[in-house]
Each structure stands twice: as structure tokens, then as C-alpha cells.
Image (cartoon, rainbow, N blue to C red; front, top):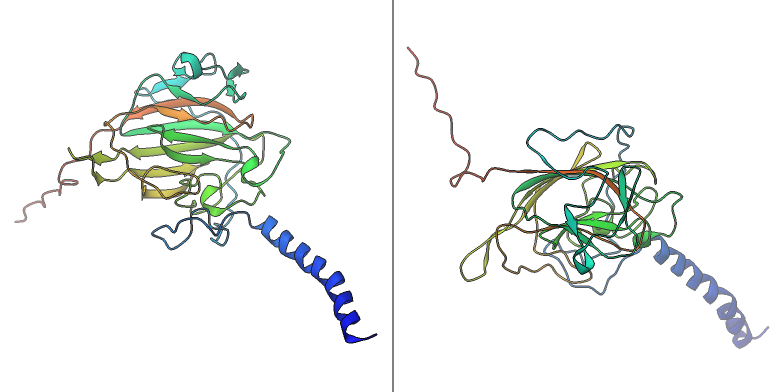
Length: 279
């Protein structure tokens, strides 16, 4: 066999194998390398960004009862505290939960600022799809600062888009996801951003997220509004805004949603206790 024929045979046999291996590698690491660069040095939705370690949370428990000073946003009976397309929230409500049904996002009728939000969710079972196409939804404060909802149980996606991520900005510290169909909890403590009279952000939004009883973000500062394949940005708004739940097309379920207003932070930080006098 001459060299030309040998080279042709090698290319025809090896090149498809190499391409298949490269395609398989890309399929295992979803994400992008052509998006803008975040302050962390990673691209938005960077396919090479390390994934957080998996931590098995405690088994699913009973719904967490709201405290006495909480406002119940969904008690499993109706969507009277919510609105949506055409001024009406039209998600399915049955058996104590509401379920995404491709009628569009829903948002609270009331507006909130600094708050503690408790919400429980379950991704579809059996699981269908992969990466961002599996159990996708989201919790948005002011309709623009997202904590991602996704089926991240043995489902690889880009790190800043997995469950409990600050979408497009920060992965969670650990992956505390439960199996599809099991109820999961978010306890989110959110401090709204502040803007000056010229529309400049003088204090970013800050969030602490507890996923299934495990802290996955601690006093994390948002870089701006969460975006897909784009850098975060700040757009001035008031001190209160609606909370939005995303209809991404997957039948994600939610239950037991309640919220508490948080008192304003002290202007000069926490007070320093006075030391007792001695002698």
C-alpha cells in the first residue's frame, strides 16, 4: 500500500472516530467558550468551569410550616396571590402543589424588598432531557435576579446554570440536589440592591441560599441582573419588586411558598456591645 493510499485510509477511519470522541466530550461538558468573561475570569456559562462537589442532603421531610409573621404566598389551594399573562396566573393547581404548564411565568401580586423566601419544588419524574432541558425553572427577585431551579441530580450542565446557581454568575458551593420527583427546599435570604439618584448601583443585591438544609451561597453579591450568555448589568429600580417563577416549559412543581420581610440593615453596620465595667 503506497503512502497516499495509507493516508487516505487513515483519515477515512480515524478522523470520524476522533470527531465522535470530541463530540462526546462536548456533550459531557455543556456550556460555551464564546461568551463574555466574568470578573472571576470564567466565561458566562463556561464549559470548563469546575462543577461543585455532590453532597447528599437529608431525606425529604414534611413541608416546613410558615412562622407566625410570614405571608403565605401559596398554601396549595389557589393562585390568588399570583398573576400572569393577561393578569391571571394559570398554572395547574392540584394535590397541594402548583405545576408549570406552558402558560407563561407567574409573579406575585405584591412587591417585596429585603426578605426571607421559603419555597419547595420538585422536578419531573421520570426525568426527561438533559443539561438545561431537564426540570428547568427559576426563582427571580424583582423579576431579574435569579436563583436557578433545575434537575441537577446526575445531570451535567454548565456550572453557573445548575440547580441553586446564581444564574450565569456563580455556581453553588455544593450540589445538594435530591432525585427527580422528590421535594426540595430553598430558604433564600435576599437583600435588595440600592441605587443613587443618578441610577448608579451603590450597593449590590446580596443573597444567602440554603438548599435542602445546606448553605450553598453565603452573603453572595450579585454582579447585576442575571442573563443568558451575556454579562450581568444593573438597571435602577425601586426598593421593592415582584417575585417571579419561571415557565421554562418543564412541568416543575412548587408548594408551600411563604415570605417574611427582613428589617433594614443598620446604617453603620451592627452595633458593638459595650464591655462591662470591672472593679
